[in-house]
Image (cartoon, rainbow, N blue to C red; front, side, top):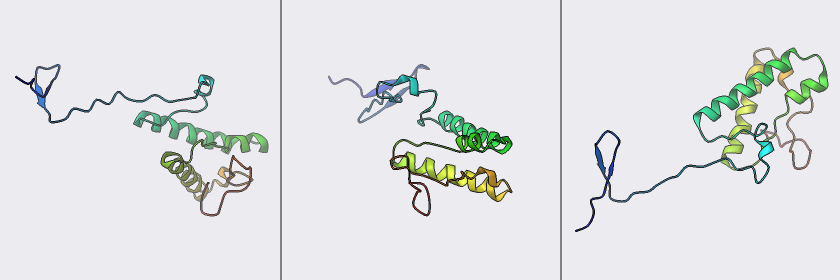
Length: 130
């Protein structure tokens, strides 16, 4: 007699299924460089996203008060590793946040050199970060 295809829940209920897929989750990979973790937060959960957004907005706020041009530029420098869908979306979101703050009369949220490609150090293409 074949076993029943159902998952037993902690509360005693059971869920029937045809095919069971177990997803064990994911961890952020730093490729043997765990020291990067404080500077390179992951983006896999809603909590990760809100933490990252807060860090970006705090950088804008600090840049607004910063009087030293070099320190302001450093606060407005964001590095995105990876050009997959998440990296592209993140780059666009950072650009939109900066434009919103600039439109609100806070032009100091623009990096003095504009967006730049980390791989070549040259200005990004018009229309966004690349």
